[in-house]
Image (tube, rainbow, N blue to C red; front, top):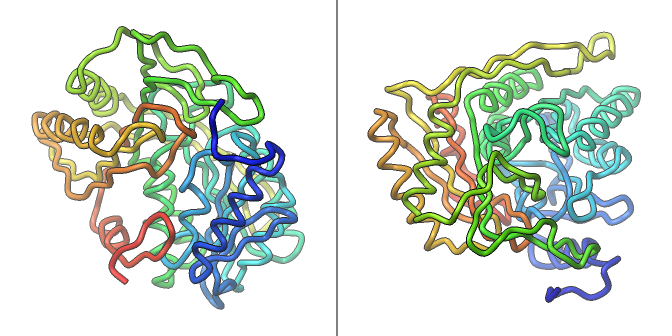
Length: 357
């Protein structure tokens, strides 16, 4: 294992300290418990957005803290869910009186801990809502989840809903928009190599030099299948079609009722993409694949979308939700309407995304 680290036990703390030094104009870092928040938090009268998850996926989530995206982020240890006390303390730090929206990727630890944090925040008198992100079209169930995993659509939700909160949307409106974007989004990823978690010191999984993993998860969870290595065009087309031809997906999620302080079940159905749809296309590096190769993937993705009469109206290309040094990429497609595009285009100032300001 060759990594730019010091002691294994200090990895996340030292990286957070570096982030604070580099981006002190945008954010602040709290180390006990660990959370990142906007430098100007709490913003009075604005809904606060909080997300989080295991470290190792940078810039998500801490790199998306700032004006126009997240108000707070809770980093766990590498590939390990943050704890409820992190989420609770972060919520208290960023609440400006309009409530806190938790954006939760669908991994069992994240879900359980954010649910506990929501209950603690409610007991403190903080209005709270929690929206689940479950956009991975590769699998139904995985090592870390019940149902589809939360992956690339998370970034789109944080940007779109963050801008809506800046524009004055209330807590219910922010939750409704987050839910809509999640239902409009689907993702799929591939791995060319494994990655190494510092505490483990060895590859998370074995992948033969001549093969790639189709449908990989962001923690190295097994995908749909392992295949012989193919060309960029062949892999990109396979990924694009897996999303565009994905059928309707129905599941039951849990959301929070602020009125009586209980969880309730809600059945949701994500409809498939259709000819005539306009979309945001996000081609993401898993960490070890250069942007130059992502452009080759995007080239083929655009061709496949055009053949299906689906129009890419915005794009994002680069390493935004990574898996340490894993070589590979993911594609996320999100159906875009006027509301989503307005907030996608709105100004944002974070370490990981910055435009229009």
